[in-house]
Length: 272
Image (cartoon, rainbow, N blue to C red; front, side, top):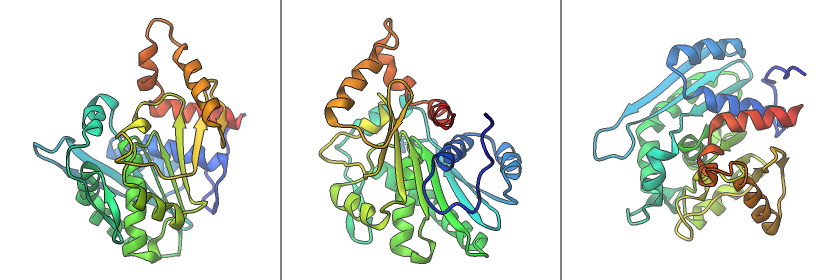
């Protein structure tokens, strides 16, 4: 069964919208010309590309995102990175955190710095492109998911008129302390959706208790079924089942499950 086109008038969570947001997160990995071409196929007539290059000793090479707009919808997609590039960095809790937003808690220093480098471009694009009261959506995979969540929080406290109508993240790491996570949960109740694919290693980092996740998790189990609820015991059993998927390399499951393609494929499978 072919997947229906993206509904630009959507205003609340749905599985088809989650699928398209996963594709938008995947699109962030593409070159600028590919993003523009694909955006037009999806019905968006305006596209802005955002990029900032870092220099050592910053642990990431750059931060990239794009914003595409139609008459009814605006989507900002943040690019992620591969687990091999960020695993050790995410595990390091010795780096002092950065202040949170709206006077709430703190954020992981690396995420805060990465967002700061690109935030003015994103905010300006939203202000310029939102000329018909379009809905605003943020999405991202891996690092991109962390930036999508934090960008929404920062905009909420600094520019309330640009509050996101929905935030969809895939394989997002922990980003902030309990205080900012609680403030985010309150501000984006029924608007934030954090997808985790079975044994994906990145959502398990940075370690607790220093950093916490926001709520509203959507769990993709070892068989690819999307679950809105999963008991703690059920999750443990299912993750153990996922580890047996490759008998010769069980430890690779965490990296394999992190692939953005796995998220897109799982959501498409659930649509069918």
